[in-house]
Image (cartoon, rainbow, N blue to C red; front, side, top):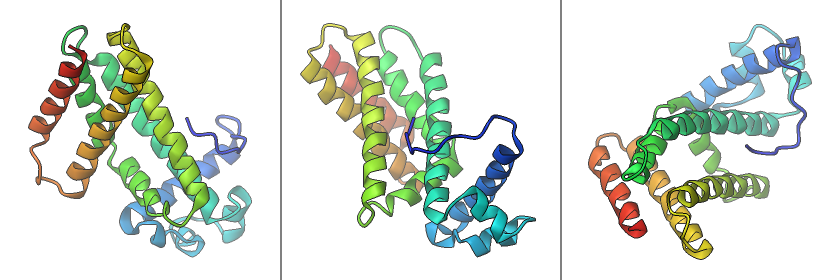
Length: 202
């Protein structure tokens, strides 16, 4: 989904496998200690090869962070898309889609940890802000496509506004449930978000 400008290695190549090993180790460090815990020295401690091998595959921490983000977003998107496709058809589908999207995020705990850690960079990192803008634009576009399928007579302006609302509701519910487990009634929140969107389409 994100276009970060790097050429991916051939599937199944030794280079791809090494990169995945590095990213797996980096993911563990970020989940345990945030982006501050991700250093080349910490990676060396988790891997069986040297700093030189790590820097051969990734130019530096930023490149690792962006690769982690891309992988996390792909994982969340794949999971959410599958759940949306499996959701109810016809009446009530928008509510089912909200549930599917929320589940798609929350069932990928490590990927969420990467995404939320990345957000800590937004205030001071223009490249991170640009990537985040692409991420949100992609979520809005996908939501617009769903709304166009469910309500083809909606005006473009209204469809865009409802897509923004849908993204906001999903991200808002997800962040509250993730950062403060048990603080909200997840089922009721998802149900009310779906009802509000269904009512807007009625």
